[in-house]
Image (cartoon, rainbow, N blue to C red; front, side, top):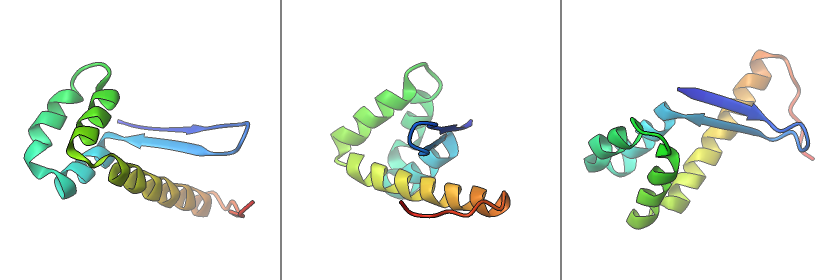
Length: 88
């Protein structure tokens, strides 16, 4: 499942993907893959996932990974839609 949201107030794009979670888990905590997959089969999974990351000391690493991927997705979308990306 993928979801992207555009904030009309500030122009920020928020992107979430279960594939993104799986990639992070495979790279940084492969022994927890089955546990994370189970988390995402229930409601409230994203919050429980972040709690697990916090307990493992990986929450900041997750935020860095997620932000990097959000930026990549934004740049790709802009290229595909011929939108010039400028910095504020």
